[in-house]
Structure formats: structure tokens, C-alpha cells
Image 1 (cartoon, helix red, strand yellow):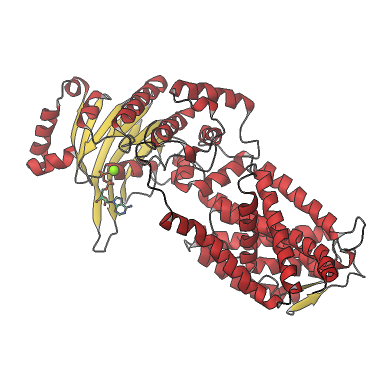
Image 2 (image 1 turned 90 degrees about the vertical axis):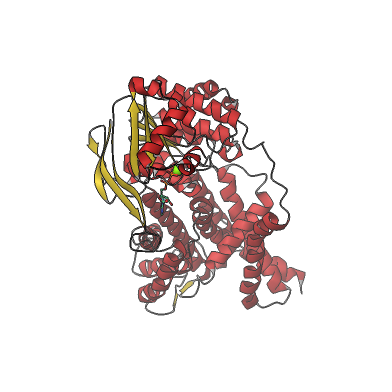
Length: 307
Length: 264
Ligand SMILES: Nc1ncnc2c1ncn2[C@@H]1O[C@H](COP(=O)(O)OP(=O)(O)O)[C@@H](O)[C@H]1O
Ligand SMILES: [Mg+2]
């Protein structure tokens, strides 16, 4: 219970939080904007890293390998999207099917369950080795900038005609079709975008930790949801602007990983963290339901109908 | 403008819940026609409008709008030709988006959505002007979420949205039924105005016989998946509620029970 140890663990926690923040933004896009819970991400959270490491070791440049990871994630999203829209399988089940398929795909990409990459031999973008170094290579700085760029791009995209169509699809699909929006297309596009971001996050994580592992995405959806919920609980009232909402998701993720390191420091096993996370997310997902059921005020009569 | 030929639609075919909702409906509307639609609960009024809008495809028959055969077109492609207002005020707008965003979405009905910015400056002024015309104070609330609006405000907004990109056909499905009488009258008046200003070909379902007689230039009544009464022109102008009831019992060969159903 040495406080210095806790302080020492903080930079790493913030770095991981930022990396997972990009993943959580992906979850935000599907869960909050498209209104579907996409379980593909548990698989995609490994695919991105696997693709990145294999391509880098095959001689690809870092930016090209990152782009390829993003594209691989989009393909995973495409698979889920087509299962859902073209085959009529419920979104949750579509995600589970792709996730399971990705387990095999990820093993095929890496050739084994765990694929390390040596930071000495490649000019990686982020590495946990630099986490306490005050330089431009510090992952907090690098990933922080990546987060800001991602938020800026998404802010732009969701302000465009196409982005607005995507938002309305999640808000009211029947109305969107009545406005001439191909909601199948926008749903698939949203899933692709989301999984692309998750794969990008995965590619960064694999560099940071120096390996990709077939189980690195297990429970990712729940961690993503936790970040979204933490961000919403703390900043939901004050951050109304879309860019700030995305920022609050990233901060939510940083808080999650900070608490994580606190829990470890307190002597608990990291293996228990998934149980704790699950319980917390379950609790927060139930609150709106309980509120409606036990604490609802009697509906105001008349007020709602008057123009 | 609208040509419906012998359309049939059966729901849940082959199950105990099988329901023949449309049984050979044919209807032709001319350019600028305002046709009111009445009929008892379950007569097939909404089903006919849904068939035209393309919520699903019909089992047989054809539908064409402005000379284009749309029978096989998916709903989102037909949307180019059609403006809609639903019975449920929740259905016509995106509640988590702003008033101005909803209007901008509707202004692009039937166009490809590109990576251009979603709302232009010129649009904003146009919407403000149009909202002022509604006289509901919405012109100062452009950035409010539509979910905060009352049912009447939402229906008025949905009407405005339906007319932004002039449709070939306006479909109103009991769009005042969920509103209190005063608000309903206001929204109905607004509907008349928008139809007139834009010379829209319109179908309006209503459960109010008087409204059906007063509004529009043509009236049809549905019964059991078919159009059983079709009056227009001078004949419609002279129509009274008792006459309409009388006509109905003759056509359907039924008595009071159905009349009550009709008036409900
Ligand atoms: N999507 C659907 N699935 C199954 N049955 C339907 C569906 N839509 C309408 N029906 C049935 O078709 C009949 C006509 O319904 P509808 O057109 O909604 O009547 P109304 O004239 O009251 O608008 C009803 O019996 C209704 O239950
Ligand atoms: Mg109906």
C-alpha cells in the first residue's frame, strides 16, 4: 500500500484509458447514436492489433499498418451490418456471430494466440516504455492527440448531411425512411465506423503493451459501456455539445483505468475487475428502469397535448 | 397523380392470425385532389396509406405516383414523392435531434446525402420564417430538441417538414386524433393551408365524418379492406353526416352496430 506505487501506476493508467477511450467512442457511436448494442467489438479489439503487428513485421510503414487496422475493423463492422440488415438477424446476435468468427480469424492472422512485437526493432507510435518519459514520444501525449483528431473528425462527420442521416436513423428509423434515408445503409455505415475506431484502438494498445493477444478484447463492450456511462454520469449535464460528449467518453475511460489501478493498488486481483465492471455497468443500466418504475412522477395531464 | 390498381394485402398469411387487410383496392387521384378517407376501425385505411408509402410491398396490384410505377420501390426511395404525417406525434420526428436538424433532414428528402455540411445559413433563415408562420413560438427555439415539444407542436412541425421538399403526394393518417380538440382544429387548419399553398395532392384519413365532409374535394369510405363509397364534386359538397351514415348501411348491408363503429 505504498502511495508512491500508486503514483507510479498513474501515467500508465492514463495512457491505457486514452487508448481505450478511442474504443469507447466506437461503442458510443453504436450504443448511443445508432441505438444498437454491438458485440462485434470484443473480436475487433483484437483484430486491429493482430493486423497491425503482422503488417508491421512484414515491413509496412506504421501509418499504413494503422490504416489497414482501421479498414479491417470496418470489414468486421460490415459483416455484422450485413448479417443484421441483409439477413434480418437481430443486431445483438449478428454481433455475437461476427465476434465468434473473429476469434478464428484473429488466430489465423497471428498464427498463434499471442503475437509479440519488439519495440527495439520497429519505430512504434506508442510504447509503455515511454510512459514516464517527458518527451514527444510519451504515449499520453501521442494518444491524447490521436483522441483529439478522432473527435474533431467525428464532429465534422456527424454535422454533414450523411452524418445527420446516421443520427436520425438511431433516433427514429421509421421517420428516417419516410425522409428518404436508406436506414440499412446508414446502420451498416455506423457499425463500420464504430468497429474501425475499435480496431484503431486495438492497434494502439498492441503497440503500447508490445503484443496482441487473442483474448485482449474479452469484455471490451462492457469496458466501453462503462466509459460511456462514467462520462455521461459526470459530464452529461454540462457537456451538451457533441464534441464534448465524445470527450467525456474518453475521460470516462481514463477514470475507469485510474480506478482500475487504484483497485490493484488496494491489493485486489486484476482478474476480479471484470466482475466489478460488470456489476457497475449493470447497476447503471438499471437505474433509468428503476427510476421509471418506482420513482416516476404522475404524468402531467394536458400539458403535453397543448400546442 | 396517384393510381392504385387492384391492390391486395394479407397479413400473417397461413397462420391463425391471417388477415386480408386490403381486398382489391383501386383508386385514382388527380393532380391537386384532396381526398378524405373514413371507415371503421380495422377497415384498412392505414394499410392503404402504408401500401402507397411502401412500408411493405403489396401482394398483388400496382401503385404509381405521378406516372412512376413504385410498386416494387422500397420505402426510402418512394419518400422522394411522398410527405407523411402519422397518427402518433412521436413517429414523424427525430426526438433527440434539434428542430432545425429535423427540418434540414426533411428538406433533403429524396436527395443523396453527401458530406456537405448538414445545414446551410440560408436554410436557417428560411426555417425561421416558416416556423414563424406556424405561430407556435418555435422560431426562437431552432436548437431545441424535438423531444421537448408537445404533441400538437410536433404534428405542426411534421406537416411543415412534409412540405419543405414539395411532395407529389401528402399522406395524413388521423394526424389530429391524438390531440385535444382545440389543438386538433389548429393542426387541421394548418394542414388545409399547407395543402392549398403548395397545391398538394392529398389523402387524409380521419375518424371525424364532419371533417371528412368539410375538407377536400373527394371522400372515400373503406369497409373490410375495400373502398365502398366514393363521392366527389358537387355531390360531396352537399353531403351531410346522416346521409353518409345512410349510404354506409346500404353499402355494407349492416345496421346500427356498424354506424357506431364508424363514429367511434
Ligand atoms: N403490420 C400488420 N400486421 C398484421 N396485421 C395488420 C398490420 N397492419 C394492419 N393489420 C390489420 O389489418 C387490418 C386493417 O388495419 P388498419 O389499416 O390499421 O385499419 P384502420 O382502417 O383502422 O387504419 C386490421 O385488422 C389490422 O389488425
Ligand atoms: Mg388507422
